[in-house]
Length: 266
Image (cartoon, rainbow, N blue to C red; front, side, top):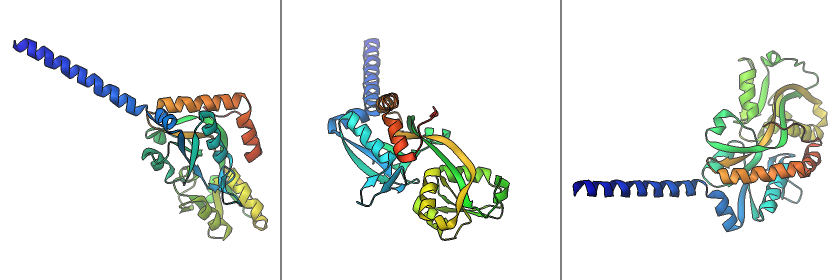
């Protein structure tokens, strides 16, 4: 009798465990299903990082990342809600489900891969140190004694911290607008930022005679996906692969970056 009761309890426990595991798996893989059911997707995009994302004269967001977000919504057949994010808050927005995806010149790193997942690259990105032509900067050692403005938490901040000598005065700001303003106003001798941001800044401020100095990173832009949402990640990868094959993403890159996709990293 006791053995029969024990077998029954063990069986019930196993069934319950399998049920809970199934529920957990369904919840872990539920983002795509939720998006399709709601017929809406929330996408975090930059609004201070031209030409990837910025506010136009009509006060509406535009740029490569903005168009990429809308492109994904079109391919999924759902409405797109664009949510403005910054470098410091974009990953927390994804983790707290304030956004379903992050399309914000997001770079991939081992530390970030511990907390979120990434799609394939959809666009190229490179960042560098820029400064006045009158200032001789040939190597990172030449940054000693110089001040460099950078956006806190961005890859430029991470890379510059590793590459620059300890004597470099790295001035960190909360967003790209503040980083650019610090350099333009003379609060910093140099600026470390994305090439696209630098190009836009140089066009608006030709009097500064700014030029490229040192490459800090050559990489790709990836879409951030909540950890464990493989169904959503795989679907977005399908859209990216198709967009590369049919030339849609090449057109976006040419339109906003004035250069093609090239050999995007894995």
